[in-house]
Image (cartoon, rainbow, N blue to C red; front, side, top):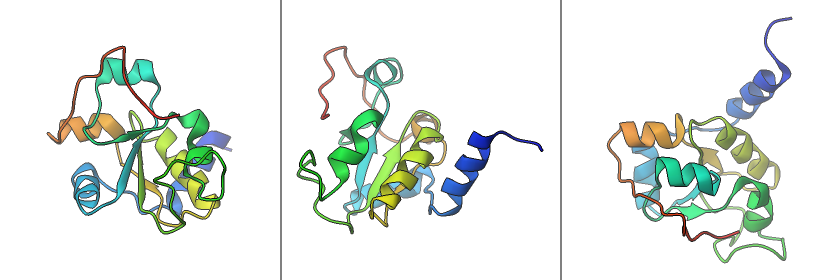
Length: 136
């Protein structure tokens, strides 16, 4: 048997996502989709961020975006919200988007190549300081 179980899990997650390349994701955000950056603070500090992205670290993502959770954010208005998850390279984001779909957020997806691809495509980025403000 070739490949690891996590590779198989990632392939299953991606098979049900309509993943977006960075320019398409940026256009979707301009049309009202919610871009959610799930990278940890240290990674955002080292790599930078995306203007207007909602920062929700991975460990609390489902609680903050589940419209039925007492810990939800105001943006978690229902199952029809368009959520685009971004991480550093587009691996963790695929698993996170699939998890949100499991919660009923049917339009959840992620960015192919993550933040690094976003930046390579010349899309807007910002430098984060150690005093990075984010939602958890």
